[in-house]
Image 1 (tube, rainbow, N blue to C red):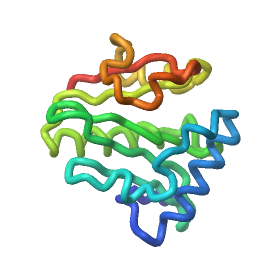
Image 2 (image 1 turned 135 degrees about the vertical axis):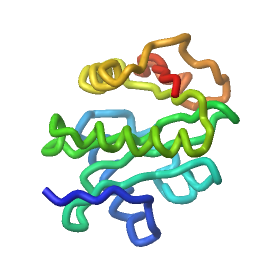
Image 3 (image 1 turned 135 degrees about the horizontal axis):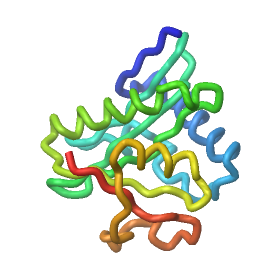
Length: 157
């Protein structure tokens, strides 16, 4: 298995959008919360933001992004792994890339939200030292009105 993890490029935009939409469909998630997918490179385009893609033979098999919430907090978004690669360590590699980038950008904390029924994600992030904390500290988040969102998890870097 030869996997490369790199920052998204223009040539990847269409395939990355399709990958994310496929995951949404596979997991039965609400497609009203697909904001940012029309141009992932732009959505994660801030100086302290990034969107990583994992590829095997030019096929996207995982993705993960980090958005800037504040000077000290980053938000993990669009963290997905293709079904056939789940449970094989790829999510751990993606999280390591996100954490490394967050440290380089001097974030102190990274947070994320999880759909209530995403047991696998809850287990994964708990294993990687994320803990649940007070949900929705930022009122302007679109997800805060979504009934299926579980809670935020937080990791001190």
